[in-house]
Length: 228
Image 1: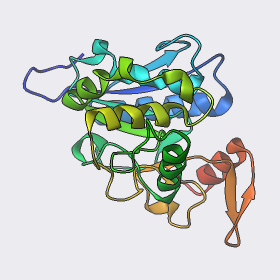
Image 2: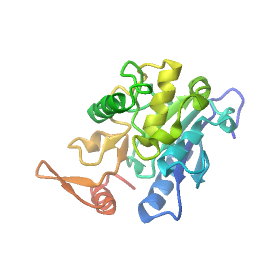
Image 3: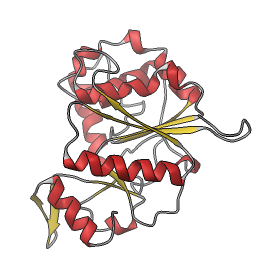
């Protein structure tokens, strides 16, 4: 773990079920390099590490586990996330827990409609591709784990639903990234202005989002010199 007691000790986590596919291998390599660059530990978690029977996305809730309590901050990244080539910014020095853009706003409203006893628009709803939680917030959210029915979200809303439910119980508001630069969708026109890129199933052709494979999108970004 950390090198000096007076320095912040941080870790980046990623999670995967089954054999790593080509994109996951690339993300693993990219993010582990970024972790070394910012002086953070890195760990790739595999399988049912949180609760057996929950969907793969929900296994990412393991980031709240007490095993990480020696770390000041835990960053969880999806395995289609990539640090932009040449990035100098340290994510651990920036404010915010997660992304809340129009897509997350829509999901929050839908969850509130479908599960009014769990969802609440007054409290935080963070996108699930990137979460950055300090120790105090992890412990606060962890305290509510037995207070929500996680199986509700194993096929709908997934990890985002569980995390929002915990934020509601803990009365956590806001703490959003000020913009999307730490989780810029790969089809955005300003993707070159990102810190981290979220590789999506769509690409932009003449201003129109069209279906594509993630590997094709990755290769296009690599050809532009945005990902290495």
